Image (cartoon, rainbow, N blue to C red; front, side, top):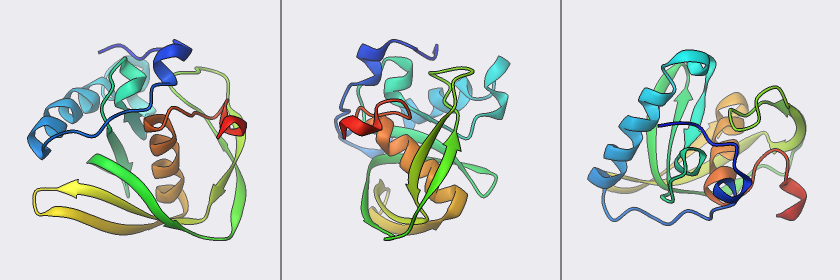
Length: 144
């Protein structure tokens, strides 16, 4: 899988997967993409960043890669901070962005849907990847 810089692909509002198995198949490929070449410092990758259309992303949470399917943010802090981020779809073009200091993410697991609260960097990673899933990125936040 190649990471796209094509705005058309990046603006895709991804659709939910039908099953954990479908999501896992995609996530394994995303994870592999994060482990080669210049992607070694990646902390996340969404399916539309490789031209896909499914609500699937991988994220490095507390130093460990995890897979997320049909994810959405269901609650967030009132407090936001300016956070500078980079994106593999915009190499060398970081941008300052407002991020909540914590978020609660709802996602599909083998046992059904689960909600987990994430703080600080882990919260920023989820917000970044869920923005991608919803067709937004660090350079088009004002369109939200």
